[in-house]
Structure formats: C-alpha cells, structure tokens
Image 1: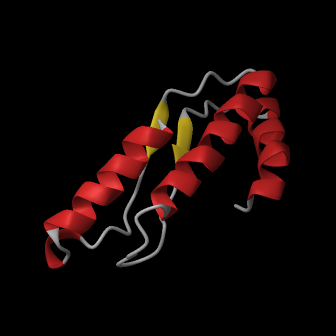
Image 2 (image 1 turned 90 degrees about the vertical axis):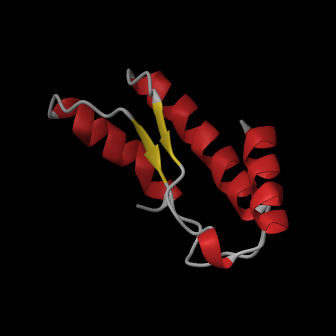
Length: 88
C-alpha cells in the first residue's frame, strides 16, 4: 500500500491480532538507478519506526526485486549494494 495508508493498515492488523513482521518493496523492473534502493530503504526505516509505536517490532526487510540481475553490469550491482548497505 502507499505510505500514507500504512499506519491505518498497521492499526487494523493489530486490532485483528495479526502478526506483522516487516516491510517489503520492489523498486521497479530492471531499475538502473543505484540510489533507488537507498530511497526505499530509508522509507522502510520510517515504516519500522511507525510499526514500533503501534506494537510491532519489525525484524524483516525484504528488498525484493528491481535490480538488473545477470543482465546488468558488475559495476551497477556494486553500486546498488553500496547504496543499500549505506542506507541500512
């Protein structure tokens, strides 16, 4: 869901006694912007904090897909890894 809807979603899950464990995202197929994952990780951090205030101590961050994978250059993969690690 969109970020503006997440707190409402967490509250609903909490009221239904559901167990949320983390955040998942996908930056878009064959993303060639190495900093896109960094932006998404930063947004996920905010979500971890929001969930914590409701009573969910998140433990999972699923980075999902979007990287060029085997069709991309090693340099691009290295840059993406750098931005992800920097953001964590």
